Each structure stands twice: as structure tokens, then as C-alpha cells.
Length: 122
Image (cartoon, rainbow, N blue to C red; front, side):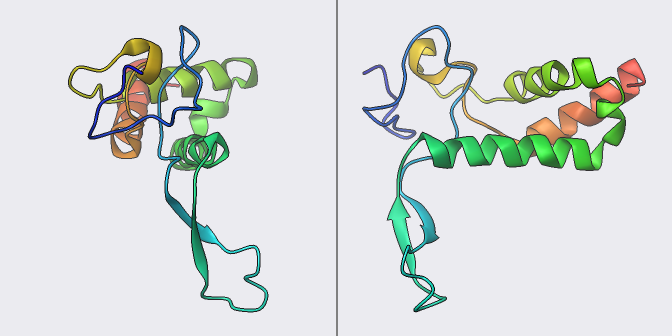
């Protein structure tokens, strides 16, 4: 419901006013549960757990590249969230109840963090 055919939202994903943004979580290549037997075996998986990993990795990259973002621990999570959502790209004809701020853009988030550091001296 309310999806964009180029960037589909899984039917079992949450929809509504609390969706912040979307990230890759459908048809993601991941190690097979049987990978101990074969280290090069990948399977295709889907779920919000995989999308969450993309967002968490983006937050880690921001803090790794710009450690001063974390100098005020009580504000760090809000600042990182603000940067990630402000840099998301809104797909054409998106439904904000399905896509929130839009698609996760790691490159844009890193650029936005650099701008934030320069503007705020964070």
C-alpha cells in the first residue's frame, strides 16, 4: 500500500506516522544458516532486521568519520537521527506513511554530517 514500484515496501512492513525512513531490507544477500559447511554460500532474505542493520551501519559510519558528533552523549542519538533523516531521498510519488523521510542515503548522510560539523562546530 502506498509503495513506489521502483522501491517497493514489503507488505509486512510498518506503515504510519512513526516510519522515519526506509532502507534495503528485501531480497538482501546474507550468509546461509548452513554457512559453516560452505563459507561462500549466500541466501536471499528479507525483513526489517536487515533494513535496521543498514541504518545502524550508517550511524556507525557517521560517528566513526565525525567523532565530535558524539561529544555530547545525550544529544548524539538525536543529532545522528536528524542527519540520517534529513539526508534521505524521497522517491517520486512516495507515500509518507510508507516511506517516512524517504530512502536511506549513506553518501548524503556523510556529507550532511560534515556540513553539520562545519556549521555547528559539533
